[in-house]
Length: 269
Image (cartoon, one colour):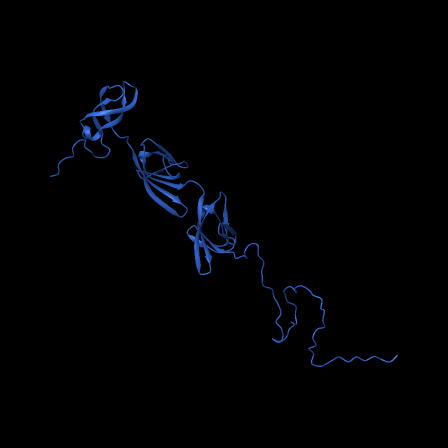
């Protein structure tokens, strides 16, 4: 048989911030005695006698934690959802379209499921079983970037009114991509002319647009192929390097022709 838990003692509590009627405000009190408690279970009320450390007035006190209502919360951000639980004052009013009180990060309510099975646009926290919300702020689009046989995932903030269509160019921090497919309404769309609001799109599939590095031009040029490997002159024009500095010769060029000296003939006058 398990022994019942004992009520908290004055030594265990030590001191507490309580309202003093003599001072007219909350002050630090020394706990003299505790009685009538319901044990050390969480949320239990505590009763006893305390003495104000400022005016030395001794009086009875009763302290109980404020009541809270537990609400299941589902927050969506793009194609991902996160489920958690929030504790709110029971009388807090929740409204669809407004921010959820005390939520961090901010979340905007989209649907309220009541404890009796109905849905509502406005209800008290104590009557709400599940609150559905979306993360407040720019929606992040999931972009799958296709590069050959590989793909990477990037995120892009979707501006209000943004529409996405097959063939559109999407500017990403890592470079532009051409949209080749869109995942929306439970299907994947690939035909030209398929256009959706960014809010309907779960995944954007884009193919990287390959461009030369900025500030450089193509270094290769088409050039003809010489008719013979031994030929010193190509039969068609091609890009050549600089001829270098020109010089004036001071001695005749060495004769390399195998035919010997050139004979010239002139008619007698």
